[in-house]
Image 1 (spheres, rainbow, N blue to C red):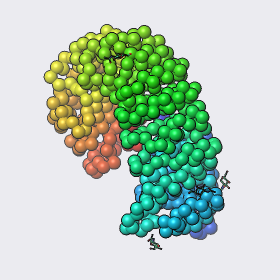
Image 2: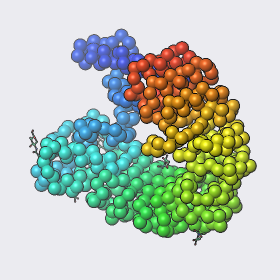
Image 3: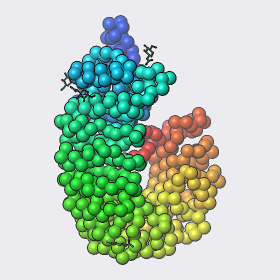
Image 4: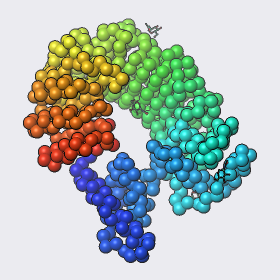
Length: 542
Ligand SMILES: *[C@@H]1O[C@H](CO)[C@@H](O)[C@H](O)[C@H]1NC(C)=O
Ligand SMILES: *[C@@H]1O[C@H](CO)[C@@H](O)[C@H](O)[C@H]1NC(C)=O
Ligand SMILES: *[C@@H]1O[C@H](CO)[C@@H](O)[C@H](O)[C@H]1NC(C)=O
Ligand SMILES: *[C@@H]1O[C@H](CO)[C@@H](O)[C@H](O)[C@H]1NC(C)=O
Ligand SMILES: *[C@@H]1O[C@H](CO)[C@@H](O)[C@H](O)[C@H]1NC(C)=O
């Protein structure tokens, strides 16, 4: 984020903090006008700024109260993703507000249907704004959860409800219809389920216009067998939209609606990003259809997918592919993978997860990465892999090591990091894995070109001290994503920052629960050394 934005946001937040309450109170209760005018900026600027304010907890709510102009700009933002991170009480309020947006006829129909369950919905007057219009991202699971909370409150929390799933479906159907008719901005649609025994609304609900016609992102995330209406929706999607850019499909292994998926792929003319997870038998049908999008596809991520030679052939044709991820896929043998060597693409980013697979396949795929490759994520390092990277992918500047880290054979890491003039290094170890205690990474392993270091793993305080004490790399950015960080770790970093004077940016996950001592230390770094401390809501973008 540029410093101008930071400044403006700070200005607005200060403004909101110090005067908004007074302004509103004066205007509303005393009929007085505040002396300080709220800043006026063109709508585009306001929106850009508010988007950043939005990322901070409840920041935007106070902005709502400033004046009508601010309010008009903020309501669409707040209502674009209203289901995210709500308390039970707020889910109830949200559903009530949406119910108030219903057409009279639908409202009466729903309330008479609910009466047969002895549920009476309170009449609410038409709200000021057409809230349902602003919805941009919809997840069926989030709707189910919100409706469930609402019913729970209606029934006074004690009532044992035998028809809960029917009631949820009834209300969800009415609300989906509302969204399909009103949400002119609906761009992202996620079909997932919280209650796996009930179905989603019938297909007739989703063919209302404008409905899904503006979708650019579609995701299906199922771990249970797919329901009848979900399958119907998948089959109908090609008739409802044609501008999906990002498609994300997660199936349970035994599912086989591959024909519908390949129809979706071949009808979306701008398909740019494709994720597929959990397809074994019949993956060929889906992957084969990627050929039809060979001009537009930039990103392909396959996880837990069985890949045959024909699939690799289809991948090889995607000439604009820049970012490829093969994570724990099956069928990766030298014979079938080697067709990738004929590929027409130049990758910038490659993510390889193998564990059970032999390193000759890894070597082969790295060869495909070649000189264009800049970023690499990998979960296996051995001498063949290091050699191949140094020979074939000499321009890699960023490496993420996933669940594989320097231990005894440190020379390999030294060779790799120094051989590449590495600039960015991330070490990730799953937090459930205590192996990090065996990690031996010292500052001397880090090349003199390294500018960015992200540690998404545990560290004993001794490892941590050793790493920073011996580090000569001119680090500019340090990010520590480790839950059990304590004050001693912070002190080690502070010492490094004070002595090396190269660090400009520091990010620490879990900053919100830091002790006052830790916070004081960070404030000092900011004030005395001009260090930019990345706000926690922004950390995953760094
Ligand atoms: C009223 O609701 C029922 C089921 O809930 C539905 O079948 C019917 O089509 C609805 N009627 C109108 C006019 O929307
Ligand atoms: C919301 O929009 C719908 C359809 O465009 C319209 O019928 C309804 O009156 C609007 N409601 C408000 C409160 O503006
Ligand atoms: C829940 O309680 C309210 C008042 O506390 C009452 O009016 C309502 O009928 C109750 N609802 C049910 C389903 O018991
Ligand atoms: C595809 O997967 C990646 C990594 O898990 C994720 O960041 C991205 O949002 C996914 N794409 C879509 C369209 O959901
Ligand atoms: C290689 O691909 C062919 C089909 O393209 C498939 O029949 C064969 O089983 C694959 N080999 C392995 C070892 O997966």
